[in-house]
Image 1 (tube, helix red, strand yellow):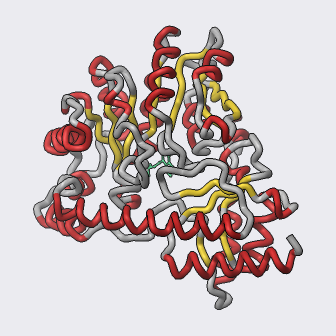
Image 2 (spheres, rainbow, N blue to C red):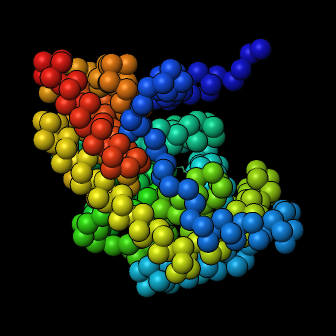
Image 3 (cartoon, rainbow, N blue to C red):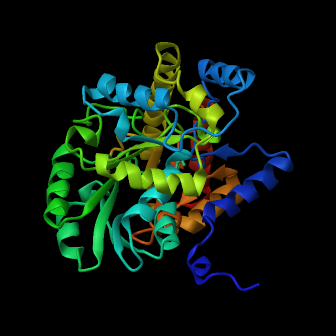
Amino acid sequence: MKYAARLGRITPFRVMELMERAKLLETAGHRVVHFEVGEPDFVTAAPIVAAGKRALDAGETKYTQSLGIPELRRRIATYYCELSGVDVSEQRVVVTSGASAGLLLLTALLLNPDEELLMADPGYPCNEVFVFLVNGVPVSIPVASNQDFQLVPRDVIDRWGAQTRGILLASPANPTGTMLRRETLRDLLTVVNERDGFVILDEIYQGLVYDDAADYRTGLELSDELFVLNSFSKYFGMTGWRLGWMVVPQEAVDPLARLAQNLFISPSSIAQHAALVAFDPPAMKIHEARRAAFEKRKILLQAGLENLGFNIPVNPSGAFYLYVDVSHTGLDSTDFCWRLIDEYQVATTPGIDFGDHDAGRYVRFAYTTDEKSINLGLARIREALTDWGT
Ligand SMILES: Cc1ncc(COP(=O)(O)O)c(C=O)c1O
């Protein structure tokens, strides 16, 4: 069978092989510490699960409106008002099958073949695949720790060309956990606006923010022209339900509806009915308790790794990741990850999964595991460093 050429550019996550190894080790009876998993270890909050069951019993098992059920679009709009006082019309809310579907809808909406989308390296690895799928050109721009691993206006000014149409930002970001400062976001918006481009802002880790570094709650405070991506996966702990949303400029709603009808017909009806209660106080109380648990874990893991001599160049304000410089071990990050899983049963993700820039230097640690496991992982890493003589 001859597959399309784009397949040649779509690489598997390196961490998948590491996860396979972890599974084999577990089958052989080893206790593996998991710092590689990019989803909450908590199951979905009970009120949401109960609402999902009620939806099933009530026969909510059919297609819905392609943009999402009106009650959920309205509830999401109200959430923005509760979150930051920002006024978002429910008409601008588009419910999707996870942020992943949102990304596909946006690249299909905004990019012609050969047109470029600028994005940060390191970044979420699937982003460029959504661009490939519409025969666009993803342009990864190396971003360093001294710019919080985020794009800055100078990057955009320098790299913007005749074929460039827009930029993709994420705050908090995967894999670095860093946030875009309000001022930087504002300046980026200006620069892109001057070039008649579009800005996609991925806020899927919104809610998982741990200190006062955040000087805004959503980019929608700054502009109505942004395409904002969000999801029920992370803060709301609903990865397996496959549900997300976007807030888009009013004029983009109809074209997006056309695309969504054709690509997906509708998001999951059951998931949407369940998500209706995700913003209500009983569920929010659980989400906030989990956010607090993530924050404690972050402090524990960050301090533990720094005590072991690892450098975490930017204090990550959000998500559940630390992007850790392992160069003092003398090992390339991929070797570091393999040796750690093979010899000490600790699973992590090498920087190469998130791009090329300085990838050999960095490893992503996800604190999606409990404090006991974090302590065990740290003890094993301490042992590893002693044994390796670093
Ligand atoms: C930055 C970022 N964007 C988008 C996604 C996709 O999330 P989902 O499709 O589960 O909403 C992820 C998942 O890890 C992510 O890290």
